[in-house]
Image (cartoon, rainbow, N blue to C red; front, side, top):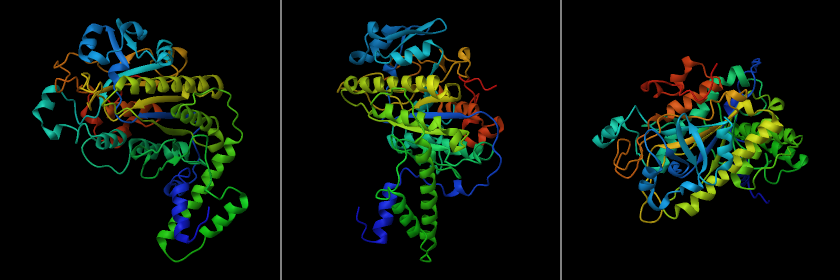
Amino acid sequence: MLIRSRRDFVKSAITSVGALGAFAKFGEMNALASTSAPYQALVCIFLAGGNDGHNAVIPISTALQNYSVYAQGRQNLAQPLASLQGPIQNGNDTYGLHPLMPEMMTLYNAGNAAILANVGMLVQPTTRQIFQSNNLALLPAQLFSHSDQTNQWQSAIPNSTASTGWGGRVEDNLQTPYNANASFTSITSTSGCGLFCTGQQTFAATVPVGGASLLMGANTPSRLAAVQQLMTFDNGLKLVTAANTTFNRGVGFSTTLTNALKSVKLTSVFPASLIGQQLQTVAQIISIQSQLGVNRQIFFCQLGGFDTHGAQLGTQDPLLQQLSQAVGAFYNALSNEVGQDKNTVTFTASEFGRTLQPNGNAGTDHAWGSHHFIVSTGVKNGGSLLGGRIFGQFPSLVLNGPDDANARGTLVPTTSVDQYAATLAQWFGVAPGNVNGIFNYVSNFPTNNIGFLNLS
């Protein structure tokens, strides 16, 4: 690659060191003794576009309703009863999963997956009546907006702008006791993490599928040394000097990861899908965590394409299949080869759900509450997850019913993102006394622990 000027070089560097992340504040932390606590990881899979949970988790026969209620509201988008994966049980209630999610069904029935029903962004406990009163002070800002709801999910702040995400704030809180001697950042993204990964002291490394890559064109020791020497040039501009320092630190972290990954020889088979390859990269990094010195690690993966305003069945079906296959392969690799299945919790997120009632284009429109999956080794198998259960309150699917905000099957969430995230954070090591400082709105709700993880 030909670089014509220093300005061109800096522009090129910024473009090609996405794998290096921004480590300025992270690298300045004191090297204090790390705790001897076992390693733990959180793996967020963000389903970008607003995943329709109505076709992922389907009531068959419950105390509240049966399959016919679902089918009546779903109309031509209903998944046939005979094709559903399952049945899966939640107490005496029977549900089915999407026909192309057998891996998730197997995990659930083995106690290694749980479902959180009807979760979404909330300021406070909310009802259909509160929504219809249009009291904006009680509702998240800009409901049904992709960008706003994505930022709110990732920041856990429902009605104002944010400069940090809840993943970043959690790692800020745990950096000193758990990751002080780390040679790599504690948050890793495999797909363009936004606000979620940003803390005050913690910044993410973006690692492409397959592992870290060095600066474009600086792929030999001599070339890399030349680039690093160029970065030591002092032209008197503080901004440039700071950028050079950050760049050099990033190169160091990338080199560390690249060298550590050379020893990885995982034989577990992952799907060739993008989400499958992202989770394979995560599994590889988890397998070398002891070499990196990271004891609390967060990963952000993303699967896009869920904005299904038209032709939903042809679009969402293969995406849910990819998700199920990739999560199944990831769990098996952690269990059978990496040995961190009990110490890793994988969870799904999405900016919002979608309407139960189809639109006129065989698709659905932006809505609110939706259902999400949590995967880890269950308590009956020696882990922490209370798997094989549905947590939260599964909603009524009656159109214009008590849980429908607008007569189209727009679910008013009964569990908040703050509660979801705070439960994960406490399992991860955040002390109960620090929860409210990370999740500013969780104190508005009856509990900050939904109970799907054993925190003892």
